[in-house]
Amino acid sequence: TFITMSSELRVDKIIPTGGVPTDGGGGIIQIKHALKTDAFSTSSTSFVDITGLSVTLTPKFSTSKFLVTYHVTVGHNTQTQNTVQLVRQVGGSDTVINPVAYNQGTSLQFFGSSNAGWDRGVMAYQIIDSPGTASAVNYRLRTYIYSGSVVQYVNRCDNSSNNTGTSVLTVMEISASCQN
Image 1 (cartoon, rainbow, N blue to C red):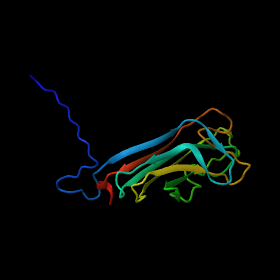
Image 2 (cartoon, one colour):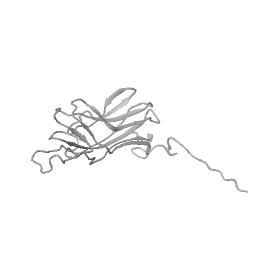
Image 3 (tube, helix red, strand yellow):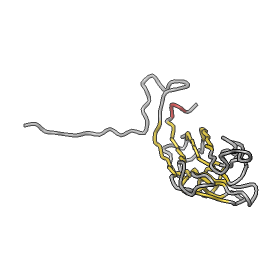
Image 4 (tube, rainbow, N blue to C red):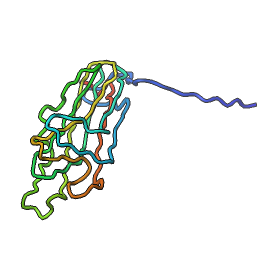
């Protein structure tokens, strides 16, 4: 008679018997992302959250670091600078991660272009963040416009209401062996 047994090994981290290697090794403990495929627009001259681009992750350790990346497709109804800002929230308190939200990625130039109103650009950013908590951490993206007469779009251009792009916010918790 044969007895069939199954087993499962679950761990938060594995450290080699020789210790954690310097300047390398390790990996990702957990990963979450938000994929935005619908359109968003604003003429707000104060920062507003971009709906659908928010990720909440509870770290396994209070010493964890997070690799945070975003790629946002943007368009405008006139020439302007792109504005996308990453914010971390822990326990209701906001911390701006990239304080200079403008001039990141491609500045869209519409005047004199044969593609005026059809142009789009991609805003991209990556950082390793250290929130220093074991509590839930929320990362979100927000934007604003310098002048109320300008419209900033996410995932579309000015001349088409069809969604013409995708945007993503990804958060990865990094294992202890990557933390220097």
